[in-house]
Length: 346
Image 1 (tube, rainbow, N blue to C red):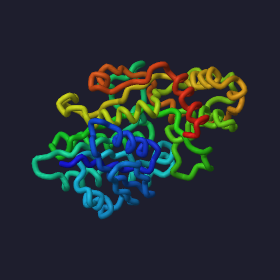
Image 2 (image 1 turned 90 degrees about the horizontal axis):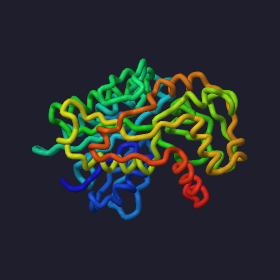
Image 3 (image 1 turned 30 degrees about the vertical axis):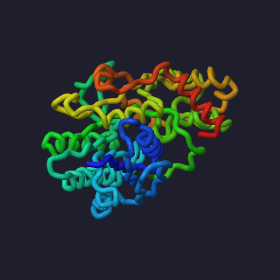
Image 4 (image 1 turned 120 degrees about the vertical axis):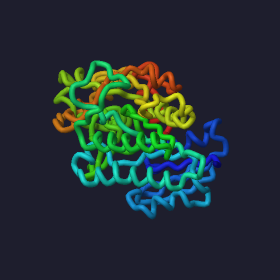
């Protein structure tokens, strides 16, 4: 097979970063990219690429992704989805996008696979698959019991990826992502019905770091003031965008034989931080006056969803596969984002 990679959700922030990372990866020389999303993605410079605006819930449009001038991809990154709060608020849309479209992409991958070869199918899942009573430290054997529609959808699709792998239809790799901080972008508009959770740990809007570093006020939906005890008790499993995308690329190169024989699920390495840790790092990097731009208005729904996600993991297994972890906690991440703001990259 040629070195052709299909990325769905490629117009999203992480999908765009992945396209650039694959272009620069020495293990994927002359990579050719098929980039698809509900809005047409932008291809990185220097790549042979096809960009496609596609409804990934439509069978004909998904099949067309495997019939471009670049031919059949050897790797599929399945990164599209309706995120946390959006899945909770619009159950039917969440089912359609987070389960039905993934199954359609899996089945199309199966049908389009050349004889005697397996296409790598890398599925980006979430820590939202966890819920209920959890051990203090999550291990690979911890059972996933989601407490939200987003986690339920991700777990359902994980089971499909595992089953298609067990049957020899694909070479599946399932990545449970930490919450990725800090993402760039303009101040968010009023959230549409399909918006992600608008919280301090939301993958869609890390507002309590991003906006203050741009000199803008923002609202933290956890606690009612800087003295609120919830800031110390609510923690999350985090990773920087640079490390996350590096791990996406690594996932392509892990030998199939290295995974556990019974599952292709891997939670990616990260670190634990509370809302207080975020704010303390912001103060160390930018000063108290910047922290004062954060206002507080507690959102019980947001807090319930985020609180159900685990915050500590045993990372021996993912590290053994070659995945990497951030060093130094929140402060270097905030410092890097401040530099990105100052240099016009945010």
